[in-house]
Amino acid sequence: MKKLLIMLMVIAQLPMIGQNLERHTKVIKLMGSRFEITAIHENPQVAWNAINAGIAEISRIERLISSWDPNSQTSEVISQAGIQPVRVDKELFDLISRALQVSKITDGAFDISYASMDKIWKFDGSMTEMPSEEVVAQAASKIDYHNVIMNASDQTVFLKQKGMKIGFGAIGKGYAAQKAKEVMSGMGIKNGVVNASGDLVAWGKNEKGDPFQVGIADPQNKEQVLSWLNVENTSVVTSGDYERFVMFDNVRYAHIIDPRTGYPTTGIKSVTIITANPELADALSTSVFVLGVEKGIAFINQLPGVECLIITDQDQIKTSENLSLNDKS
Ligand code: AMP
Ligand code: MG
Image 1 (cartoon, rainbow, N blue to C red):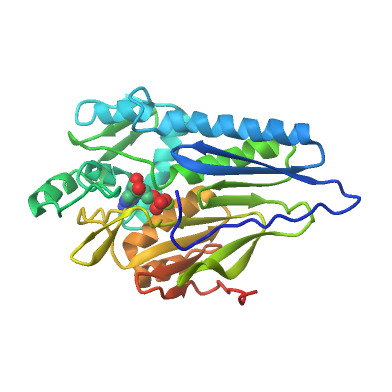
Image 2: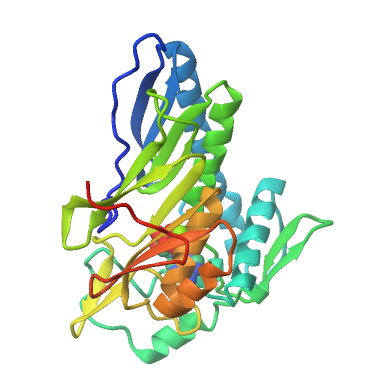
C-alpha cells in the first residue's frame, strides 16, 4: 500500500570497516500491509532468527485482533454484541483498554467502535454515490466507546448495543511493530527497524553507527524528499494514503471516520506522528485526522514527547511546536 506524501526511506549505508555490523532486511506482507523488517547485527544467523521471530509475532497478533477471521477473539466479541460479555486474552483486554484511553483523551475522535461504519463507506474505488443521511445516521448510532464495557475481574469485553463492532485498523500495525521490536531486541538485536507500510519504529543506530533517517516527501512532488528526520529510538507513524479515499462533489473524503457524525474526515491528506511508542503514534495519527488541523496541533502540543506533521488538502505543511524540519538536502 502506497502512502501519499510521506515516503519513508531508511537510507542504506555501507558497513564501516572493522565493525562488521551488517544490515539484514525482509520484506513481507502481513496484516494486509507491506512490512519491512530490518535487523543490524554482525552475525547473520542472529539477525535472521530475530527477523523470523518478529514475523511470527506479527502473525500471532494478526490472529488475535483480526475482524475478518471468524475464529479470532475479536470476531467473537463482535458476534456477541448486545448479547453477552466475552472473555478474552489479557493481551486483547489490555489493548482494548488502551484504545479506550485514547478515546478518552481525544474526546472520542479515536474510537475502535467506528467499525459499525465498515459496510457503509468503501475506500477501494467501488463507491459510486454518497450513502443517504439515514443510512449513515443509523450505522453511526452504534459508535460509542462508552458502550465498550470492560470487566477486569472476569477479563471480559461486552459491546452493549446490538450491531456494534470494533476494529483495530488504526492501532494494530503500531502495536504489532512495537511487539516485533520487543521480540527482536530480546534476541540480541540492539539496532533495527520495523516498518509497517509507513508505521515505523527504529531502535539503536544503523550499521554505520549513525541514526536512522526517515524522509518526508515533498507534497508537491512525492519523489522529492522535503526533509530528513533523524530517528533514534523512536517511531514515525503516518496516517493517510492516497489510494484510500473517495470523492463526492469535488470533496475528498479520507478513509478515517469522524465518530461523531459517521462521515469520513476532510481537509487533511496525511498526519505523521513522532513519538517513542508506535502504538500510541498510530492511535494519535488517526485521532489528529478527526480533530482537524488546529485542534489536532493544539492537542499534540499538550503531549510531552509527541510531535506531529500534517499535510493539508491544500498541500500546506503544519507542524507541532517542537518539530523542526531540516532543509532539503
Ligand atoms: P490509520 O491509517 O492508522 O489512520 O488507520 C485508519 C484505519 O483506522 C481505517 O482504515 C479504519 O480501519 C480505522 N478507523 C477509521 N476511523 C477511525 C476512528 N475514528 N477511530 C479509530 N479507528 C478508525
Ligand atoms: Mg493510526
